[in-house]
Structures are given as C-alpha cells and as structure tokens.
Amino acid sequence: MNGRLLAAILIVAGVAVGLFGSTYVLTVGISAAIFATVATAFNMVYGYTGLLCLGQVAFLGIGAYGSAVLSKDYGLSFWLSAPAGAALASLFGLLIGYSSLRLSRHSFGIATLTASLLCVILARNWVEVTRGSMGLPGLPAPHLGSLSIEHPRDFFWLAFAFAIISIAIMAAVLSSRIGRGFLAVKGNEALARTQGLNTLGYKLLSLAISAFFTGLGGALLVTHLTIVDPSIFDFYYTETLLIMVVIGGLGHFWAVILSAVAFTVIPDLLLFSKDLRMILYGFVLIAAVLSFPKGIAGLARQRAVDGWRKRLAAQARQAAPATSGGSSHG
Amino acid sequence: MDTAFALQLLVNGLMIGAVYALIASGLSLTFGVIGIVNFAHGELYMVFAMLAYFVAGYLETPFSLSIALVMLTALCVGAVLYEVLLRRLAGKDFERSVLGTMGLAMVLQNGAIFLFTTTPRMVPHTLSYSAYTFGSVAVPALKLLAAALATAALGLVWWMLHHTQLGRAMRGLAQSHDAAMMVGIDVRAVSRLAVAIGVGLAGLAGAALAPVYSIHPTMGFAFIFKAFAIVTIGGLGNFGGTIIAALMIGMLESFAGTLGSLVMADTLSFAFMILILLFKPEGLFGRGVRI
Image (cartoon, rainbow over all chains, first blue to last red; front, side, top):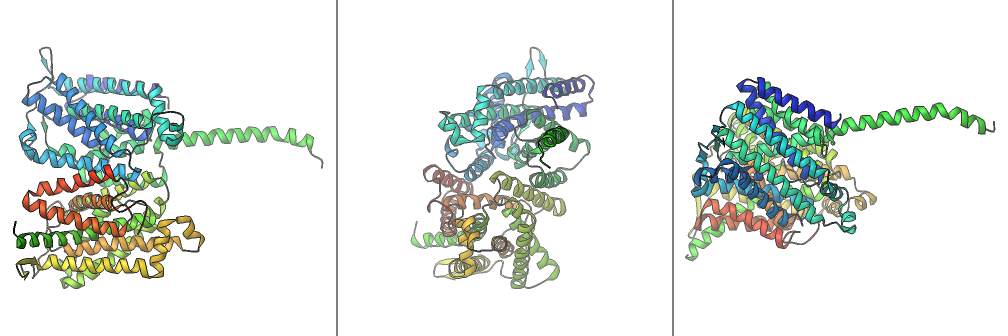
C-alpha cells in the first residue's frame, strides 16, 4: 500500500481517537502512539541497518529512569527531563554499540541482551537513585503553560504529537543519505567499506538515533503511568518490539508502524491476559520465521512481484507465436 | 581470610561451576554442531525442572529414577525439537534462528506461567538438609550429588566427542558443514543427536537441581544469561572452554557473593563477560568453533 495513504489514514484515525475516544480508547491510543514510535526506532536499527539489537528495552528504561529522576528529584520540567533522559539512553547506545559492534553478529545480540539485564540489576540495587524495586511513584505531569497534561485526552494529544514528530524525523533520516548508508551497511558491509563508507560510524549513528527516540518513548510511557520501577526493563518489551517489527516487515517503514498499532490495539480489545498474549506472540514469531521471514509487507511485495512476473510471462507468450512461427524451420 | 574459609569458598565455587557447565555446555554443543544459539535453552531447563517436580510429586518415584526419566524425556524432546524447528532454522540467517528459538522461549515461559502461575515450588528430598564434612569443609549433600552427576555427564560427553566415531562426526560437522557432507556424514542424524544431547544435559540439570533451588517459570531466564556469559567467555561452540569458563564464573560468584554481596556476584560475571568481549572478542580460549 502507498505510504502516504497509510500515513494519512493513521493520522485521521489518531485525530478521531483524540476527538471522540472514550477514556479507555484514549489510553490504548497513548500506548499505540508510543509503541509505533519505539517500533519505528527499532526498525531503524534492525530493519534498515541490520543490527539485531536486543538491548532496546535498556534504552526505553534508561530514558524513563533518567527523565523520572530528573523531574522528581531535581524538579526539572518534563520538556527538559525527557530529552535529557533520551540523551542519556542515546549515550548508552553509543557505549554498548562501540564496545560490542566489533564482535560477531552472535555476540552482538548476546552482548546487547546482557546490557539490558545489567540495567535491571542496576535499577533494583542502585537504591539511592532508583529507590530499588519500590520505584519512583507520583511522577509529575507535564505542564503546558497553565495546563497540566493529566487528563487522558490531553495526554493522548501529547503522545500523538510526539509520535508524528518523531516518526517524521526518522522518516527524513531514513530517506536521506544517512538512511542509504544504513541500507548499504545491511546489504553488504564489506562492499560498503571498500566504497569508503564509515560503516562503524553509520551503525553507531543508527543505534544513537534509535536509542534517543526509544528513550523519549520510555520517558513518555512512565510519565503517563506516573510511576517507574524496574519492570520497565522487562524482557516483555523487547519481545513485543521484535514481534511488531518482524511481523510488519523488516525495513518496511509504514508496515511496521501499522503492525505496532495493531499489536497494541488488538490484544487489548480482545482482553487477553499478558501471559496468554505472550504465548500467542511466541507462536506467531515461530510461524513468521518459518513461513514469512520478511513479514507481511515482504509477503505482499512478493505477491506483487509474482503478479508482474505472471503478467509479463503471459505477454511474452502472446507475443511468442508470431516471432517463433516466422523463424521455425519445420 | 583463613585457609579453611578460602577452601570452603573454593569448593562452593566448583560446585556452582559444575552445574553451570552442565547448562552452558548443552548450549555450546548445539551451537557448535548446528550453528544455532538456542535462546530457549534456559526455558527447556525450567520445563525439565518442572517435570521433575511433577514426576517426584505424582509418581513418587525415587530421586534417581526421576532423574533418569526426566533425562530420557529430554533426549526425546531434543530430537523432536531438532526435527520440528531447529532443522528448518539451521544454516539460514543467524537472526532467523534467534527469533525462532526466542519465540519458543516465549511460548515455554509464558505457557508455564499460564499453567502453573509464578508461585515457586520446592521438591522435598530426604537429603535436603544434610551435608558431608571433609575436614573443615562442609558440602551440602544434594549439591554434591548434582555436581557429581554434572561431572560424570560432562566426562561422558567429552569422551564421546573425542573417542567415538559419532563424536568425530560431530566435531567434523562443527568444523565444516560441507566437508562433513562430502565425506559421507549423515548431517541430519548427527545434528539431531547433538541437539538431543544438548537438551538432555539441560534435562539432567533440571532434574538434578530440582531439590536444590526453588522451581518457577522464570528461573530459566536467569540461568540462560549466566550460560550466555559463560559460552561467550569460553568461546561459542568451544566445549572445553565452556567448562573452564563455567568453573571460573562459579568461583567468581562464590567469592564475590560471600565477600561482597549476591548482587555483586551477578554484576561481576556480566562485567567479566563484557571485559572479555572487549579484549578477546572470540572468547578466552581461541577463535573458531571447536567442540
């Protein structure tokens, strides 16, 4: 489907939710907006640059904790604390990226996964800053002038605006020279390097940008929940992001956003418990890997290509009798 | 620190290490032979510990019999797992195998939570509170038993890898898939057996440790990270390296956990892994796949 059309549909749907949604619908909408952004950020690293980074949840949590600590303990407003938390996540992304990108692809996955586990240990035990497993409750709501953004409707508009701006920035990056650099790294790293591309630089940039928007998403998520505790580092988020990106289709921009929204909204509407949802996600992941590894978007593209091929073959067959008949020697 | 205390910590570390070696070497063997990092290995360990709990509870079999039963089941599960899932992922994109096995881990872990809730369970055992003392060193009986079983099983696998035709085939397969095929090794059968043994080791660990640690659906998760750290330090696919790394981590935990805190022990083993990765990305014991 056309990207611009999909974007328009999503924006209209978002505006409709913001104008007419009930409190429940608005709450689901907030999650959908945040997850669409975070999944897009993951798509940038995994889908475009080809790095299976299993530490995305670390970025989410560091952005969340950074923002929460700065706003609660240091009295910073949300507008400053959230970007600061995101910058911290970005810095962390550069750090683990720099230390683990020289490894084989196996080790990169394991190292990033381990980094996210270290974050849980840190969150539980660095009590002076994180309050341990109690977490930081009562996070202050963002203020806009005299308006305190607390009501779900107001918060939805904030999340929606955040999603649109972040996704637009990431779309711009991905369609620029930088985005082509990412694709070159994914396509054939050795070749890209012989063409004079600084492949390590592109990988780090991809991680840093992705970590920034993931961290921002984390800050928004915990501000909405008004509490942050170590469960923000739950592996569940990593798994959910993987599902969204893999099922949507790696490297397909709009398809991933659509699948992120679908995977946030549908389980919520069907009232699945978290365990049941994750069992189902697991089966879906296995099925996807076995039968359509390029995601639904990849499947659709494959269908389209097959269609063209069939049409071309039919045309060729129609044209064939005239030419082959003329040159035949009986 | 006096020598008796140090000796006690050393023995504790060796026992923890033996158990870690059991879990990590299964992971290493699977990776070595079929090139797949099995992210569901920890969850398989959890499932077999659960199975041991139910076997002990409902069939009321003696401990030794339930270990044998669980291990036999694990071997079969491993063979089926290879045929149903891993065979289709082997040799393809590395990422596909990560996603596939991670999907399996999600199903197993959340399935266990769904069926059995997160309540921790204990397998009672007559030896639960008894310990042997050697000089000044006290050794809990069940931990000693688990460590002895681990040593025996690993010794057996080691012997198999180096002294039997099958073991040579596995090592050949690990070195070069194509060359192994060319000299007539039945890749599918050997791979299936390697995975079965890998999962069997997880089953043995689950059953042997069932009375030692409490059993709950997320227990595999913590263990698998430890196992990842160990195989990374020892070199992925390096069987001997894995065992040495497991003993090192066990020792590190024993000393850091007693002298510092348990948190420090966990953090240290991961920090150790990151340090190794920074300075020796291929692991401590050399580059390449070697089982």
